[in-house]
Length: 192
Length: 204
Image (cartoon, rainbow over all chains, first blue to last red; front, side, top):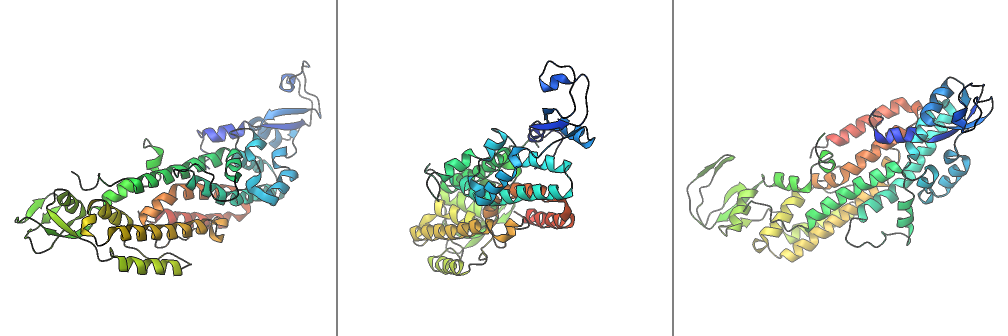
C-alpha cells in the first residue's frame, strides 16, 4: 500500500467521514454541521472528512471516538471469523478499510494505535488465504464456486474492500495469463 | 511506468518461453550442410546420422520444416518424471529441484515435437500431476506461518515460471502486510524488508 501523493486510493481513504466532537466554539463554520446556525458550539458533533479531522484533532480542536467500522463489535466479529465479515459494508462500496484504519492509527497514541494496527493486520492475514484461493481459481473456465462450502466464495467476494479488490484482480490476472499459456498450443515457438 | 500492469510486475510465461528457447538441445539433422554462421553463434556442421547441438529455437524451426529430429533432454522420459513425481510427493517440506526451464521446455517439446518423444501422452499426464502437486504445496505455503508473520514464503527450487505466476499477488500482499505492521516493531519491519527484497531478487 503506497502512500504516494498521487495515489487515488490514498486520497479516497482520506475522504471517509469521521464523526468528531468539537472541544471549543468555532464561529462561522456552522455550515459544516449542515445547520442554519452560523457558529459551531462546543461539544457539538459534526461529520467531517478525515483529512480535515486529522489536522483538527492533532491541534486538539476536536476529539473523535473510533468509528464504528473499527469498533469492538467489528473486532469480535473478525476474531470469530474474519473471512465472513463484509468489510465493504463497513466503509461503503469501494471504501478502503485497511488504509483508512491505518490513517486513523497515525493519529492515535501508542497503545490504541498498536491495537488498531494489530486488528487490521490480523484481519488481513486471516482473509488472505480465501482471497488467494478465490483469485487463483476464479479464472479457471468453470464458473462454479471454488472449493469450500457452497456460496462462501461469492459472499466473500462481495465483502472485499478496495485494496483487497486490487489484490484480487492482480492474482486473477496472473492466474489467467498462466492458464492461457498452458492452454496455448505453442505455435509461436521456434518462429515459422 | 508506461508498461501494462501485467508486464510490470513480472515476466510473462511467453517471455519465459522465449528465454527458454536459448537453451541448447541436441538434434539429429535430416539434411547435410556445413557450419552455418548466425548472429547468435556458429552451428553445425549438419551431417545426418550424427547429432549436433543447437539452440532450442533453431531446433524447433527446423522441426517445423521436418528437417530434424529433436533428441529430448534426458529428464524428458517417463521413468525420470515418475521418479521426480514420487520424490515431489514424498518431500512434504519443500520443492524438488528442477531444471531451470523445465516447464517451458517440456511444454514446447510436447507441443511441437511430440513425435520425437517416447509416449507423449504419458509424459503429458505426468507433467500435469507434477504441476498439481507443486501448486498444492504453494497453496499450503501461502497459508503457512512464514507468510502469516508477514516475513517470507518458502520458494526454494521453484522455477521462474512458477514464481512468475505467484509474484505479483505475493509482493502486493506482503506490501500490505508490511504497511499494517505496528510502528513499535520498527527493526522487525526492516528485517522484513530484507526478506522481501531477497525474494524479489530471486532471479527470473
